[in-house]
Length: 88
Image (cartoon, rainbow, N blue to C red; front, side, top):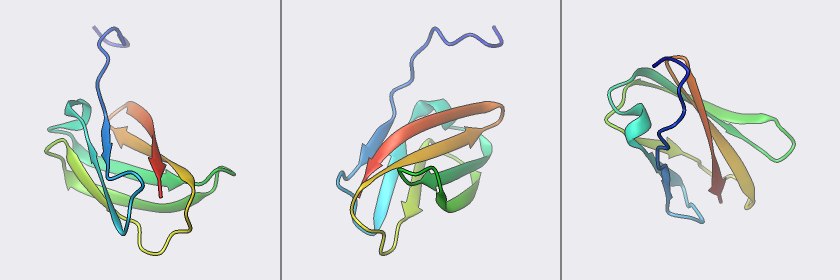
């Protein structure tokens, strides 16, 4: 049913702490088209964003030379939005 959130999807983020690249994996966005990921710092600023044309459930986000700290990845898949923590 639409709007139901009874099923909890596990999101795996690895490695943590992340280096140059972090992998975000979940069945929640497998098969989605146009998955958008925004990386947000602790003050709420969008540090980077990336668009994936198709998702197999595994996304690799290139972080580059981000300072160490805690960030949040906001993942848009259709009308769903998921947020998960990323440690760099």
